[in-house]
Amino acid sequence: MAGQVTIRRPQNMRRAPTTLFDLVTTLGLTSGVANIIMQLSLPPVGYGVNESRVASGSPRRYPIKRARTTGQYLVVAVIGTDADRDLMRAEIAEAHKAVVSEPDSPVRYSGNSPELQKWVAACLFRFYLDQYTLLYGELTEPELDVLTRAAEPLATGVNVRARAWPTSWAEFARYWESRLGDLAIDPPVRHDFETLSDLEFIVEAWGPLGKPFPMLLGPSYRYLTRANLPAEFRDLMGWEWSERDARRFERVKSVLRVADRFGGRAYVRAVYRIQLADFRIRVRLGMPVLGPLRVSDVPIKDGGAQRWITRHLTG
Image (cartoon, rainbow, N blue to C red; front, side):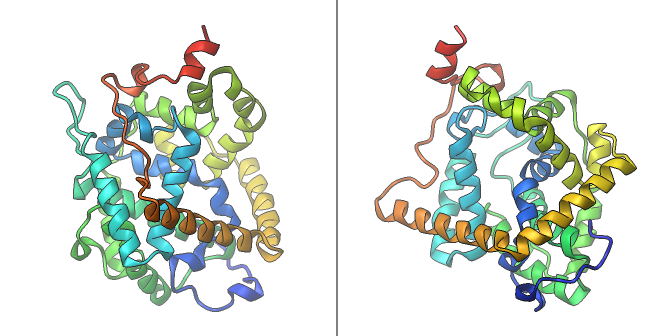
């Protein structure tokens, strides 16, 4: 796992973490794309997204909506009730029905494959573990055992059976190691990752209106994506990582520890609660929590479901 040193935890984090909510830090605000790269480095998952025709769930068409729905999936898994999770699970399963490989796809995949979704859930578990351990150092094995069991809703929320999820850290670590040899990033999927990490995907969604994001924020976010990515995944991407990069990241982490101490972590946790409230309001109003399902006849990567604003502003 990613943490290398033990840092004194803030006063409000002194007790051992027992839930994923306890692992939330401000560093998690910088590591979303890094975790996506981890998930999609398993080729059937990567090509499932690369060839997707589900426009309503694509960050290349609806980036704000995608951020909301992904965030709410995590929120429901982390602090929601069983009833919340049942509702989210049903909507995700419906959306994933449209994610199925074609005869000419490079690999076979299905969006509802328990085997593939178990890997996605494992990466999401690492999202929480890594953001904590990178800032505050390694956890003990008993602590990790508790957290492994607490992470089960990340898997059952995407239709993985509870009995398929590891019940101890040792079992999780064996599973993780067993999958590393299956990982590969082909050029089409690598291009997807590049445009996510430098925020160019926002231009795909919003046309010229999206250009300020990669221009102003792209270099920094790309760096933070590289920084949060474990070394084996950086190698798959062909990304270099120098001692200078590492020193810079240490400075970033020092700033984020201060931010955690003075309200940053509390802010992130408050956003989780707001997102859960929003989810429940949508349910009470009878709204689909993932929004209306829109599936294009053409894959998104080939221009499917291009939005009006992009078509007209780019001529």
